[in-house]
Amino acid sequence: GENVEQHPSTLSVQEGDSAVIKCTYSDSASNYFPWYKQELGKRPQLIIDIRSNVGEKKDQRIAVTLNKTAKHFSLHITETQPEDSAVYFCAAGSKSTFGDGTTLTVKP
Amino acid sequence: DTAVSQTPKYLVTQMGNDKSIKCEQNLGHDTMYWYKQDSKKFLKIMFSYNNKELIINETVPNRFSPKSPDKAHLNLHINSLELGDSAVYFCASSQVQTVETQYFGPGTRLLVL
Image (tube, rainbow over all chains, first blue to last red; front, side, top):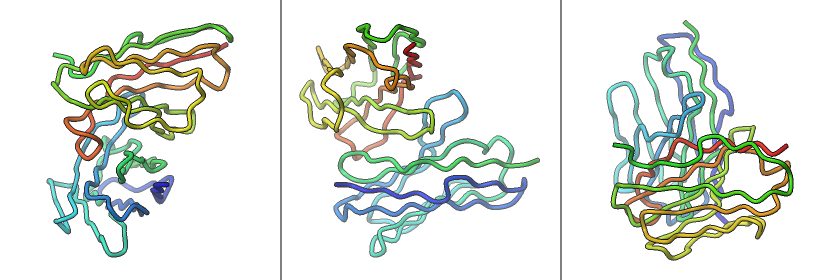
């Protein structure tokens, strides 16, 4: 079956620092890799995604990198702000398997 | 304009009862999903429907029965509720099957007493 592993499970950074969250997947047929942000009490919402024909994608302070050979992709957040505090999920595979989530806390 | 809506938002009920959660999307998407998010925040897919046809049915007790009357609606009926069913249930939709952005509903917070 599909397996998506996400690390770390919790991440605490100082405001202004960078944060990196990594996911590895098992389904080599995966070709779409989204990242969702879920604020407390809210629904998950897409923040960035990447397809398998691209190695990196950037949108202002967030970026995603993909290594298809190694089957891993990462979310990078630069110049973190307190409003970046949330749970972040990656997903991969034909069955929409989500990682277990990373709780990011940005301390002011 | 609510893209994906769910009712009810909160559901408190006794063990053994039967309850339903409704989901509607007005995005014109072909695929809809049900996810369960437990107290540890893990997000697990339960079911997926594409054009009213069941395409994903994960290891879920058969007390859970999804129904899709049309491609804009996906309802979840739960029989004989158990304490372990307490969770937040999210409906979602995507334009095509799984490999596109999913749009989530606001969630239904189910508490079984």
